[in-house]
Image (cartoon, rainbow, N blue to C red; front, side):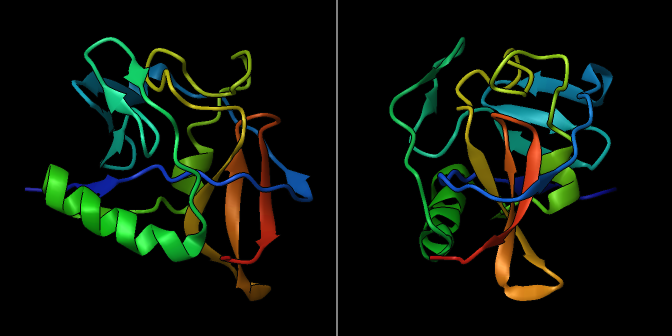
Length: 150
C-alpha cells in the first residue's frame, strides 16, 4: 500500500523574479473534508492556509504568514493537531496547483477557497543558491527562488 505524505500549505508574503504557469487538472484532485487528495503526487493538502479552519464549506479565520524559521513549529503543530506526517510541498507539487484559467488567486477556488493571491513557500532550496527557497505566487503564477528563509 502506498503511503501518503501530508502537505501543509504555508504562506509568507514575498516577491521575486521569474515564472512559469500550468493549469490545474481537476481530475487530479478530490476534496475530502478539510483535505484535498492529490492523486497525481499521492499527497494530501490542507484546503485552508495556516491560521484558517475548514468549516465544511469555506475557510474561516486569518491567515498566519510564516517565515521559514516558523515553519518547523507549524509543521510540528499540524502533526500534533491533525495527526500524520506534514511537510512543505516541493516546487513541482506546489506549482502543479496553479490554475492559469482561474481568476486571482490562480488556484482552484472550490478546492482551496481561502488561498490568497500571494506567494506560498515550498520546502525546496534553490540549487543555484542553497540559502534561498522557492515560492509559488498565486497572484501572477510565477515561481521565485531568491528568498532567504527569514
